[in-house]
Length: 134
Image (tube, rainbow, N blue to C red; front, side):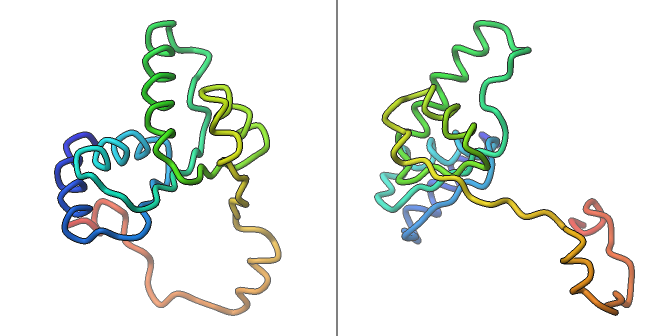
């Protein structure tokens, strides 16, 4: 992911989008680093999808993750989380983030969605993700 920082920074400088969304934990710090390198002035809206600090991690790794995520999230105009507990976890990193953190619904396929799909039948099986990349 870190190898993508220069390309993302270049994109932000050239295109200057109004909003940059980081869709998951693995992209938040990379996006924030690209923002810093590019001087990007648009909105940064990351989505925290899993706990940022796992209990299984050693104290040094927890400390460095806490600092790096705190620094990255401070750049955010809004932080999206999947639950009320997510708000608490983000606020534990930096209390000033609480006001900018919002719960968003993360839909999953439900029985209702399957029923609404009706008689749809794909004409061919989807290729595996590795085959799709070739």
